[in-house]
Length: 140
Image (tube, rainbow, N blue to C red; front, side, top):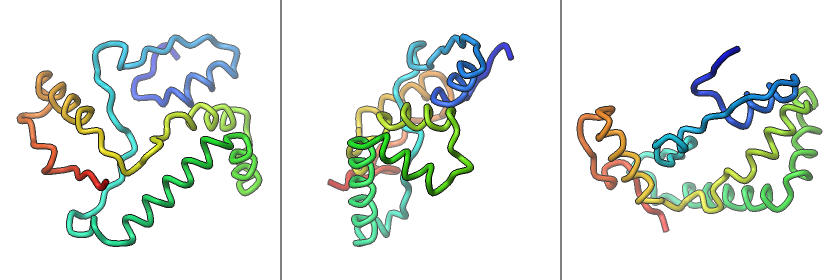
């Protein structure tokens, strides 16, 4: 393998290291691409104020808090429930992924979204800049 594009930095690079290779990782943010979110929670605009949405986000935040506070203990519980996934690669990926979770999954980083959309527009990847309020909502 000479190159990978679109790979997950917490998986492919670790897999190559476990195979005794020394991968050169070129993260897009080091080459001018602004930070962006990869895992986004989507709800219908008419449902965002329903109690179940708030409960989901509260539970998600509690889960992420526990995961961050107890990464190894969380890994052991996960691996015990899914022994087929108890591999060194998955363990390393787990530990590398934990700090990437947002501490507040309900928070909207408006500047991040606006900066990324402006980048897309400037590079002719989208035809217009859409107001953030058309597709994102701050729930706090």
